[in-house]
Length: 286
Image 1 (cartoon, rainbow, N blue to C red):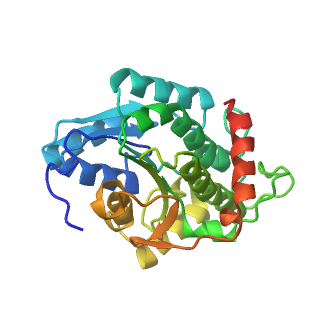
Image 2: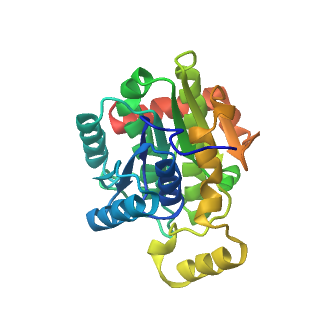
């Protein structure tokens, strides 16, 4: 992939969870291509520090921040409103923010927290910004999922996992939801010059899962050291999908290492994808 300075000039990008890890590496790469980059994070100081660091590293001053907690639907709505107040166009949306937890916790709105942050917040944010995205076409939406989506068993009667919770299942369900959302959204925007794709960045050394502390975080840190890719390596396919002309017309796919591959059987079930969409819309009040 040959992407050069100015290849994204006049393009506006929003990246969630961009103060570290894959999100930050993606923001740096797109800023190097002269895009206007909007960095999202939940901590204002981290956002400001990240913006200043990216401006200094890339020489691109068109980098800014928006602060919101995706564990709150109200805050997610405010994020969409604040973005729309600043920008009338959105060419690239990267839904990257993610959370991995050892124990079951609930969001501000009473949803299982991984499902709320990893799926529902991005479902809501994307839908709130969709008219702007379509009006900015050609445009691209990239949803960062995980290879762990393959271990998910979608129980539509217990998506909040009130009856049976495990860290692996909770994370897997939220990541499978990312892929199912991708496929259903791609069908809904077909013919409107907007592409929607999902991506598995592989095991990447990021902060995800580090909030838990104790043995859980120590294990994650060890696995990252032994097997993990760098944030830049994890972001490579995200950047490819966001900027490469090779995939300008590719939509409704699941990518690993810049290649479209097959995702799990449940995520390819059109009826299940449509059902998840309807449930999600109801949960977020759309």
